[in-house]
Each structure stands twice: as C-alpha cells, then as structure tokens.
Image (cartoon, rainbow, N blue to C red; front, top):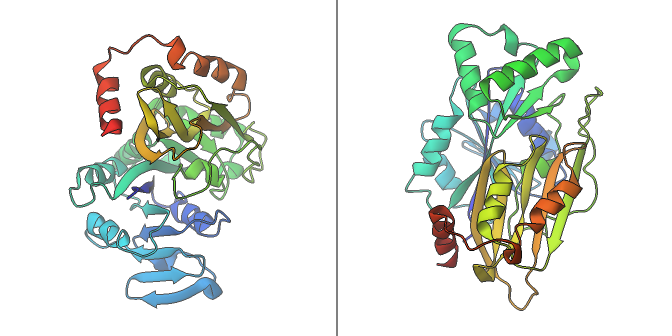
Length: 336
C-alpha cells in the first residue's frame, strides 16, 4: 500500500496556520485531505460543505475530513489511515507553542505508523508583521520552528513595507541560511508547492506556468514550473547530489524516475528543501520506461537550461560506477 504523505504546518501563535489550512480545504485540487487540528471549531468552512459531524470528526462534501487532536498524534493519524477511501494527504496543524521537529521525530519513529504514512513536508508560517517583535523564549521557539521547516511561509507580507520585510527575511536566514522562503498574504500558495507525487493520482508533470498565488507586492515571486522528460536510465548517486544542491528559489521537485539500478519499476522522487526521498513505485507494466521530473520554483531562480545540463550528467552513460555506500543502500531498498 502506498504511504500517505503527511504535511506538518507549524508557526507561532497568530502567524496564519489555520488560514493556510482553510486555503487548502477550499482548494480546487480534487484531493481528499485529512486535517488534524487542535480544535476544528477554528476551521472556517461554509456550512453547506459540512455533510456530517461525528464526535471529534467533521466530514466535508469534497471528501475531506477534519479531526481534533487530543493527546496522541500518532493514534490520531493511525485512525485516519483506517478511513475508506484513504485520504490523499494528511495535514497536521501543530500548536503555536510546539516544536515541529519533535512532532516529525514522533512520526518517523512511530512503529505503529511504519509503512502507512511518510513525512512529506514541514511548512512553518511566519508572521511578517509581528515575528521581529518576539522576545525571550517566544523568540527562541519561533527560531526553532524556522530551523525545522522545509519551506518558510512569510505571511502577511502585504502589511509591511519593503524595508521591514527585508529585515524579517534576514532574521529567517539567520536561523536557517538555506531556507526556502515564500512571501504571501493570507497564506495563498499554489497547491503544486504543497503536495508531492503519488501514484494514486495523475501524472505530476505539467508544462504550464503556475499562476501567481495572489501576491499583491512586486517581490518577483511569480511561480513557475519546468519539467524534464528523458527515456534514458539515470544513475542514483549524481541525481541525489543534484537534488541536494538545487537553488534556494526551487521549492519542490517531484516525479517518476527510470533508474539504471532499478530498471523493472519506476521510482518516486520527492524533494523539499534539502530533503530528498526515493521510494518504490509500480512496475512499468509494458510502458516505455522514462524519467519525468517536475521542478517548482520562482521565476529567475528556476533556470531550466542549467538544470537540463546538470540532469544530462546524471544519465547512467555519463556517470561513473557508484562506490558510495549510501547510494548502494538506497538501491538495495528500492530493489527489494
């Protein structure tokens, strides 16, 4: 059974986490989303979309469900994985005073959830207006939330001037120099940035530009996507190195791989920030093997020509045999 991707939404009190959850639930992505929140009474869903309320669970007409977290996150997620049909993704809105790294570790280390879910993304929402005013232990916690993030959502960017916004970006970079920062208002970001690839869903590779996410300032934050398709087999080791060194303006890469060391089945690729994941996909079933990768980023930083040249060096015919124990271990896992 394919693992259900889990998205952790973090951020200090009032940063906009619930606004982001509302944005996702109202999206036209066609996905069944399960949302775990501290209190789904805060989720602002139109009453006509609510089909059923049972205990701590709220069902929506679009196939999404919201559940209240009590004391046991792993148990709550386990309950979600028993739903039929299975959700396409699980979103966990953590408390504003919690450390997302601890929640992530709990998911990764949970024996009960092994093989059922996979941590896909940690997104931390930062309040552009109030984050620089935090002090003491609150400032320390906000910094830890940024350090744990794959993507930092710099929210309420429309409420401050350019000088103030630059200062907040510097503060984020001080906590995490390689942070992927998205400036936004009302947490409006494209669905393609949020969700990874899943073989239960359609081909993730799209050739059209991703529309601007409703940003009202001219910060050069127009999103774009670029896809690379090639029928030749790839070598895992140089591809892994490339994915770890993507420009900061590239937020996600995802798709299906044709690997020379795993020729009989496709391999799923997920890249968020510096985190790279390979997982076993379905056999090709007579389909001509080919690699299809979608890159999502900001215009100007998503240099398709440079990426294309680097990807060419990852083709098996251009790469020397791997002597990297890590690469060999990953290949063994994917083969078995």
